[in-house]
Amino acid sequence: MKKPARYVSKFRPAVLLESKLQKGKGNTMRTMGPAKVQLPPPDKYLKKHSKEPKLPEKTDSSKDPCDTHFCTTRKPAIPARTEQPLMGIPAKKDFKETSMTVPKKPEPVKVDTNQGHRELLENSGLVPKYVMKNDYGKTPVYLQKRKEAEQKAQEDDRLEREEREHRVIQRLPDEERQAVLEALKKEWDTYMQMYQRTPFLVETLSQRAHKIELEKRMDELEKKISLIERFKTIYIANEEVSHCGGHL
Image 1 (spheres, rainbow, N blue to C red):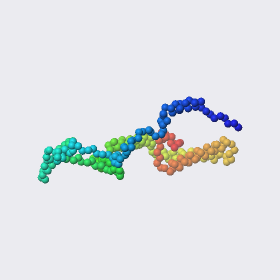
Image 2 (image 1 turned 90 degrees about the vertical axis):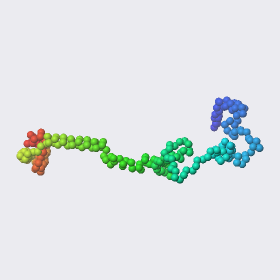
Image 3 (image 1 turned 135 degrees about the horizontal axis):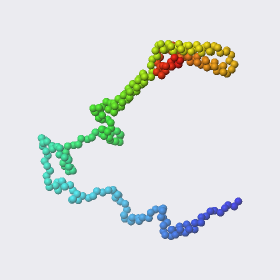
Image 4 (image 1 turned 60 degrees about the horizontal axis):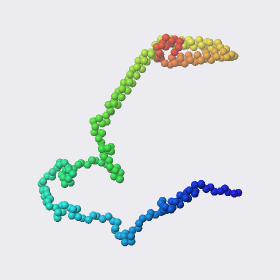
């Protein structure tokens, strides 16, 4: 099987020509290789301690003006032991007068790391400055007002609920309770008689539905009768007082 010819770009002659032109200009080490620098002559070799920094030489103008050979004024006498030093004089830029000023009291700081991180002690929370206030430990005014408003709202709701219950619900008298109990028992006897008249064997769907309805009504009446007999005091709504003879 013969292999296809290798791919050759059509720009290859132009690239070769351009590279030859660049080489002809002397740019062979334009992007790589050592830099061409002028070497020092043999007599300028590196000597010992030649790269160490040297201090400038002393001249007459750089000498101390207070030297014994150049100072023309006498220094002030040493103050006596009984003499009081001058204090309270504002500091100036002159170094000689700074010793007479009152020293500034340093601000208390705290260091919390081994690297020496400093922070003002007042802002760190370690200084008990809030406990010194007059209202410390007392409930804030806005919380007191909020609590009073909540208590007032709860009291209004309670009064409204009691008024509504008093207006809607009332106690059933004993005479009416007894009359309702007798009416329920009489109604139960009526349904019981109807239930006893039903045939023992149910043959049609209508008879079966009638019998189930009687049993349901009798169960409801039994629950109401037991409820009235168990509780001596009964509260009912006002709109239900006129219908308590037949329903509870």
